[in-house]
Length: 139
Image (cartoon, rainbow, N blue to C red; front, side):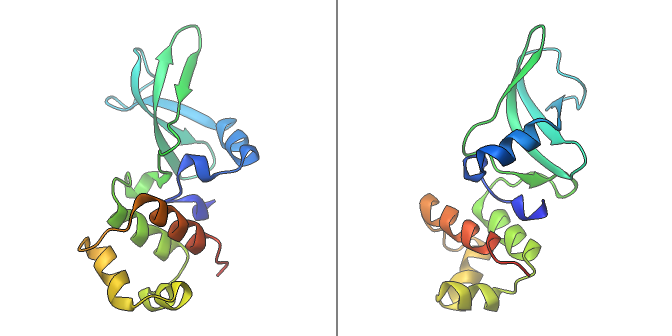
């Protein structure tokens, strides 16, 4: 499951989304308690350390909406808000060094270093391809 950290919701298979959704625990993003009002929420997946941000609609049941671009993160390590965090976290979860990523993607290590310090940022679709490629590595 840790391989999912840094991936976007839309990158998951329908089956995996369903499995995670069945383990959802919804909390209000501001209070950390059960939501009482519509608004931002955090969805924790029971039995994992995975979390994703969403919006909840409170009624007879609490309905949740997860945007396709929402990023899965490790609750203990905090939310992933930008490319710099995303690339580092996924690389580390895959037990890869910057050199490993450089060789795998066939790009200069300087580019990897620039990404991880925020000096350069690839376009969003390239970011998604890179994350998928790194997550596909079984180490």
